[in-house]
Image 1 (cartoon, helix red, strand yellow):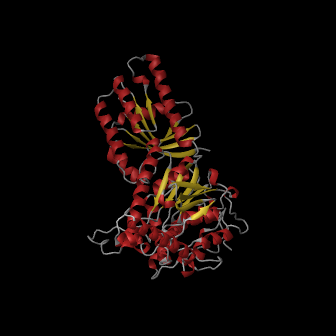
Image 2 (cartoon, helix red, strand yellow):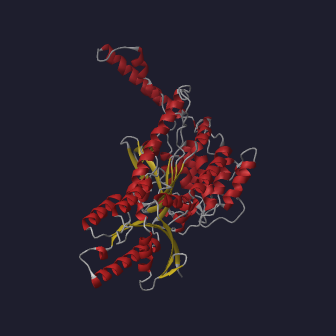
Image 3 (tube, helix red, strand yellow):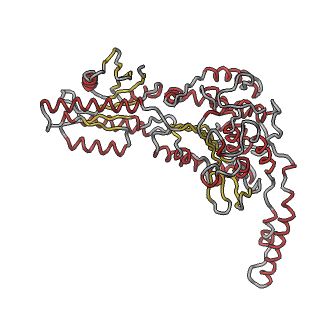
Length: 555
């Protein structure tokens, strides 16, 4: 059975393309079929030919190519111009590198540059430059060297095209052996709503469920979502129970007066009084100045965390102890990693990894979602942990280090942007602090993601973030369940739009992982959502069909 792949061949000169096709078909077992399709040795490559940089970019905007071949060989011909060929090569690579979206950018690892010239110093320089550019391969045609003539030149030519075909085989036939991972960041209860909407859309669009991935990385709100996914809970059941469409869960993910941290208040008042007494004593002895602001500041320890999230740990412990589930990282069928912050050492820890693998999942998730100053820090074996987003927005690097080469990154924690001067100044301090934290978190994530992906060109990563319109819905109180239906439904719609924009590239990337992408079922639901007068999660749910492989009912 022959494997079908596509390649885009670029050369400003038509005679280079003619030479390429003629030489390739002279290899043993390789034939050329019209239109240009290379076939042989268990592989078929459909080849499109482009002579200009703009033509290449236009084709890449609408078609997925497994490989780009840039022929920069300076063959003897009346039209040959080594300088213009080299200029076209650099212009193309500059244009590809200028793509701002990591999802839309074509990976340089899948670009092969063919070089060769009688001017050997020029070729040496070009090979060095391609190494700096991190292209997938730079293959030299030694038959064009003035040092080889006659039979030796012919042998070099055949050897060169054998290496070209071998490069194609390695790039196109080599099965992706990396792991598939989902990394979900924080964002409070509204962040959970957004992540559920995104995951439902991905679940509908792919022929494997979001519960069938190899690894899950969660921080804060994302730790709650990925904890359920790793335990096999179906995304439909999660949405149904969080929204109240079903009531199979013993607790709703909402805060109430029962969660107020009254228990710690007497202790904190006592500590504040001790601090005030120490301050007065120091002031009497002349060690500090006596003033109203300093006296008030001595009571700051009385203002502790407002809520206690121990109920969350109890709820998760019960849910992860149901039949078919587990509250132990090492007993999961997949890998789960929960990011949290050591509150005293100010370092990021990954529960589920190394020395933290024995910690119960429910306790790890509780620690990861303990957002200060709203929730108390969580004591785990003598150390205190708080929200993982303090030290990481997403564990993208950890995912790649652990073997992921397909990543879906979901980050709901983005600030609301406005072009109206004074928009934020009209809000209160709590709003401003929240928006500043979101700005810091996303700026950190964006910079780290760009650098990590640049260092790992073989990794396919796709990021899903809320639109500015959605951020308005989510920029209320992130700890009180509001706008659930609009957020989940709009997350579903916006994810569809995102997938539609990158469909040609994403479908090819997913195919290399054995995943089929089909947006038709999603599009039908989006049509229903557009016509609806009011958002309702039941429009996107599929509660009755058999669960996909690797998923469990929440019941």
